[in-house]
Image (cartoon, rainbow, N blue to C red; front, side, top):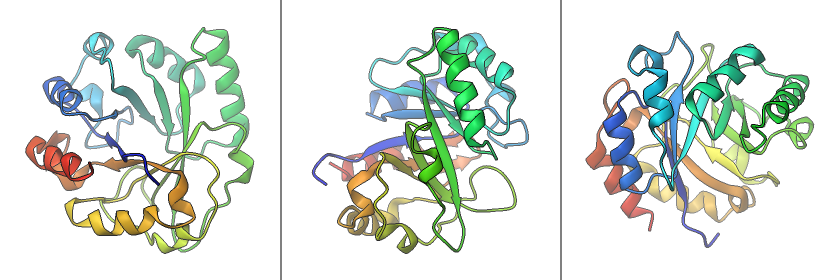
Length: 220
């Protein structure tokens, strides 16, 4: 894989940090719209603030868990999201209906990310091939959302993913070597974005910007 790896910083709760991340070259900034999360964005930021954050080269991602489609559409319109990350138990029919409602609301440019929570075996991807724009692989847990822990990347490596995907799950500064190995595997051909969060925080939702900049610079 010859392209430089892209970076998504998830769990942002401070708009000044979002602006700083845009300036340092983050490709995606994730805002969590799931109330039980310690990084629930609406505990910290008003919808109007999210709407007026209009980065040029950085995409805004909203993370949702089993949200009603009506509420989700309203939230996309209120905040100007570029991508929707579905981190719950949303099935193919949900994706299809959501795409139809997005199209009907003139939001057909909004992309959908299907999250697979990886446990002890490789998830089955095929049924989501036609409805998701991206996949995201994260560590399985009983709770929704990130765990701050790795899953076994060996489960991915020998598979032809067939769609650009985000790699998530406790990625930190010490993973640079493992990422380089992953890029050389069959699955590495479609690895597009590294999704970082808790390993780069000083507190939930508050990022260590210097640590992130060092990580991004090391990927050049």
